[in-house]
Amino acid sequence: MFPSSNSKKIYFKLTFLLYLIIAISFIVDIYKKNKVDSIEININREGYNYREFDLPIIATAKICQRACKLDERCISWTYAKAGIQGSNNYCWLKDREPHGKFDSRGFYSGVVIR
Image (cartoon, helix red, strand yellow):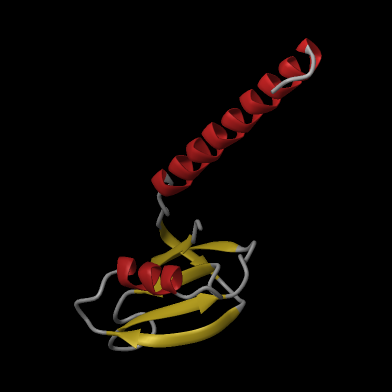
């Protein structure tokens, strides 16, 4: 199968590299799946809103975070507790990551990890 010992060495090196690339791709995939989106408490990320909506009074910031995660356009989000933007909880989905973060009681924000 191999005309020379040099060809055999090249074959085994290429095979080893292929297996190494496959192993690294599995490790990267596992790492991405284990990353957790964080929630910034009392932080308002202002700007870049493309969608906003009321949430029921029983909804939490995790509902807004999940809405962002399910929308491919969404990069970051901000949630306000009831009484801050009206009588219901409120959610803003953003198509960019605002660099300005402001301390704001009752707000929760985050950036989606994909």
